[in-house]
Length: 147
Image (tube, rainbow, N blue to C red):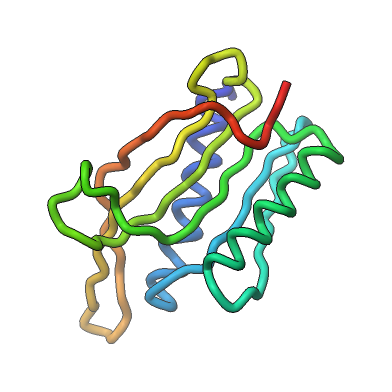
């Protein structure tokens, strides 16, 4: 499997986790996913009361993890509002994935946010399903993974 395929698989797992949580709880808590140089994927969550506190704790955890081991890819996922430049609807919900890859560090834009809009629909069995929209990427230099 090449680097792009690994990244797509990693992104797919993060999106699926967020989607399943939204379908179950109508929301999701921020979470962190990492892949180390051996290909081992880890998931980190916490029980902070607010999403902002949870995200901050995940960032702190990530900083320590990157310093202590060789992390090749990271995703920090959180619920957010779709940026206005991508959506005409104010306050439309999205999954925001912060992705960094060691393989991209030689590029000026080595990280990206992926904003994935979603709509929640009620099913006839009183459950819910989530319809995902087109992801919108925003690139920037990596913040956590360094050479």
